Length: 72
Image 1 (spheres, helix red, strand yellow):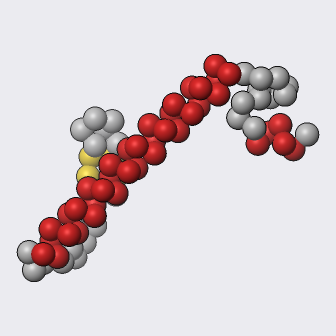
Image 2 (spheres, helix red, strand yellow; image 1 turned 180 degrees about the vertical axis):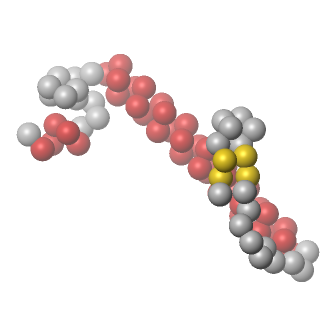
């Protein structure tokens, strides 16, 4: 029974639910792409700052213009 809860392809009753599975994977992939974009940007900011002879002293707050998500 425990394996049913861990398999996103199966619904709560243990039956295959490909539509829900595709939707969950799509959201999960979009979230991963957003995280990748953010981390790439952050690495670039730190790289530029370091090469210019500066360092970041405080928190950087960014807002994604595509998703509206605020990164703190």
